[in-house]
Length: 165
Image (cartoon, rainbow, N blue to C red; front, side, top):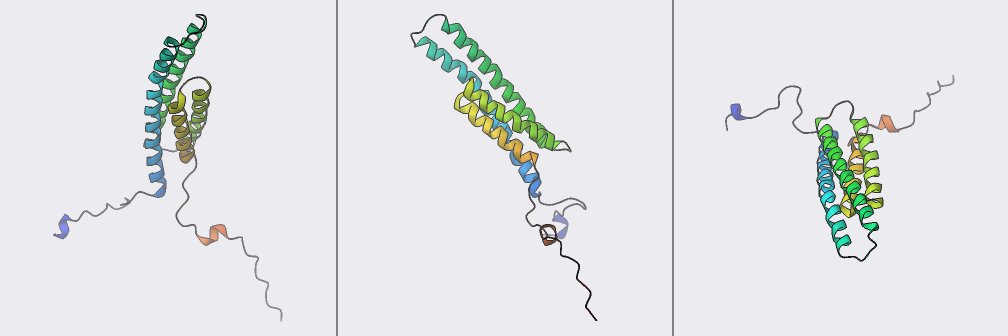
């Protein structure tokens, strides 16, 4: 192969992504998966509620309350899906505010987790909340470098005393 066909990296560019870039890419993909899971949990909440109400013998006063709870669950899961998807987009774009986005996603994931267990969303909403919190935590703090120079982790040495005459 002639040397003119070789694809050399341009000056100033890196041929391989760094550890932080790989973590950010993984986190954005995890957030998109969480958004899809929240989106699937929303209609399943309504379907399961409808099946439970239809096949059960319960007082007629309880049925509107169950449908109200299911409606709140559907709206909540769709809101979590939109915010997880938007978070995945913001994380994939990068920028100086990644720590703020990551902290917000961590809190949002915990709220989604509690919402899915306490109100509506089930196991899919729970898993999506855990994924959102995990990805937010990964983005929130920078990745550790593969090698830390010894001067950064060793305690400072006291100055050597001059030799006595």
